[in-house]
Image 1 (tube, rainbow over the protein chains, first blue to last red):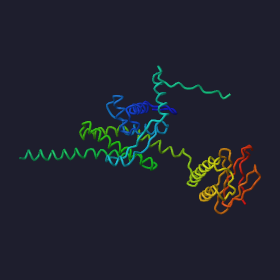
Image 2 (image 1 turned 90 degrees about the horizontal axis):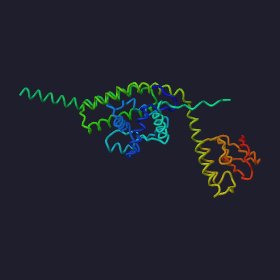
Image 3 (image 1 turned 60 degrees about the vertical axis):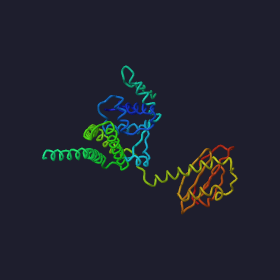
Length: 121
Length: 215
């Protein structure tokens, strides 16, 4: 799907929305598989998101500044006997972007209203 | 007797296959990730691989808790892998295209930027402590200049800055120490260690930047 600038795709909106829902339940940070499951629960999809689809969307959200990420403390992962996770968190910009995307989705046309171009004269 | 033996053999084969199916699928997915991330920057590649490994491990654990069999887990993993392939390829295409758009900085430039930032930070700290220590420090080679001078010399920095109204100029080359001239005061400070920090006079509006001249 083609997109312009900071426009958010539906999958990215789902990620932000599910992440904020997790946050309301006390999880400030999330990892890839967790958000995939949360999205499945929220949307009622039959299958989990594909690996490539999920991590590409996470990468783009991070690139846009809507998410921040860090590697998990290795001692925690070692104690649990699993690989380290990349932990993501929704930034303030992510909150705003989601609010804007939800507002756009609620409009009858469902399309973004573009600002009129300023005159150069 | 024969039926029992065959049943036992079949059971062993089933158990072995069942136990192996997840590791095999994991190897396939990780192998694919290695393939599509080839020739990408090593940082990005390591990150993608670690994230996929972690994801597979988490899925294996969670699905087992949800009551899925090994075969079902493997099928679910394969499904996720296949559905994500177009996005992987698109991501590879974008990643390979991106570095050409980024400006390349040489190692020297990066060191210079970092060093200058370090000096600037130190100067800001000193400038903020000026009200408590005053400007009476008489010698550019003594007092609180000294550590900065030494630091700057070690880093071989050449820079001019204006920090909160204070003009700070320094030129540091190990072979050719320079003079720093404050055009406003008309003074020229020989910088024994090649460094000078010229305080701004609050009564005098800031003038042009200090000129750095070779001795």
